[in-house]
Length: 107
Ligand SMILES: [Zn+2]
Ligand SMILES: [Zn+2]
Image 1: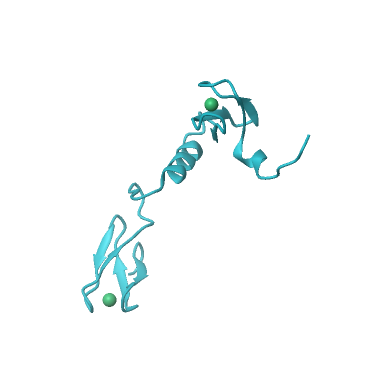
Image 2: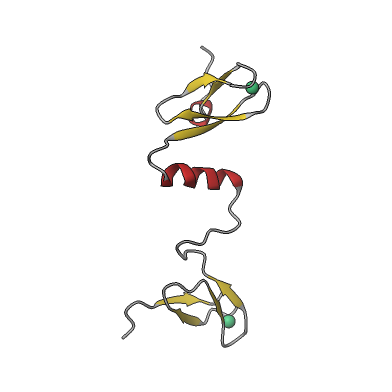
């Protein structure tokens, strides 16, 4: 029975390692390399700040916000998911959502 087990190639020697659900790290029996299983549920490590925010926004469907960066004062603030522009709460300068900024136009 291999049900519930997954195969994971050793990052150092490529050997097929098997691990049980819930395992987050596995030492290769062949070369001794510690392989961390990144996809393990419930364990999130070393995410960069923006990725963390994105995942928070996606995970919590009740709070749909978009992080925006004020060009005037450098503050970070959030806009509603359906809002593409607003005002910085710190300096009142106009701010626009990052997705809208990716296609600069001169209106
Ligand atoms: Zn190995
Ligand atoms: Zn500002």
